[in-house]
Length: 438
Image (cartoon, rainbow, N blue to C red; front, top):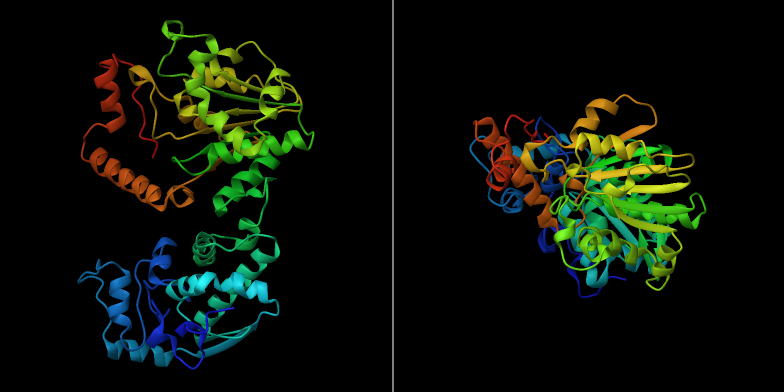
């Protein structure tokens, strides 16, 4: 239940005077964010600008936008805001949450989730007891009600509502391309659980990626760092093994840095290749009991090996994952894909903006899209910075690098990755130059 001392918890106090970040934004006119969503979320969904309504809304809108308003996109005057508001129908809706635990989960500890909802939703939110009343324009109230119902449905599926789940739910509902997938279906899809920890997709593209793995024999997961490409593929592999859909898991990745000089490194063969395969081991430890992993590897149920060891093999009844595929050559990619045997599934993951091949060679992951783009039962699933599930700053870093690359490439400056290769390996000597991947 909400804290009785909280202003947001008392229906007799209007949110516009007491909420930590209230807004009453309109949705009429071109360039405005989707109805019911704050300008910040609306911008992420592809809207060009945001406008506010009500006394003091202009200053709050400017504050939320981080002061990045310009003469081309001025804050509307109070008169303009008043005129827009008068043109919109006023709506009100009340949700009754019968279960006290659900209500506590919806509002969060000390109303933390309630304040987050107030920050990102336009409709006024009033809470008294187990009743949540929404007021504002009909569009804003409808959007807020749908958001709350999706969060309650997510709770009913066994998930815990987190601040990240609230942001992603609002973002998905504001996205016009979301299709028939609801946020509760996306965020409530459980892949595997271990010791109370459940692995599930966190974005719409991630769910489509996971569904694609179920529906296709070969899937390419392409996207920037932190989008869950390898982690979700590993979870699906473990799920398939536990369901006895396959008899073994094979994990592989190219050892690019050492190339053919592995023999010069100290230690046994395992010592030489383990540093390149460590991310795959880390993911395994998250999904399986650490005590069982050595036993499964000794029995050949789980195999972790460098890509060079795949040549000449036919892999039947296996779930095969090729990680860091951007560092394969076109010849290596062809060799790997033709290892596919009966009853097997292949998932290839990589980031085509981080190619480390020597001599300016083209990545096999770039070339394979041109070759297999129209082949049945092969899916290319593309993930973006909006699918980053690490620290939120990672997504901003990815976007900043993409903008920088685009600006410098269009200005005739060599792509930074190609320039780095030239410094390390010398001129390409007439070989194929790498594409930027965009």
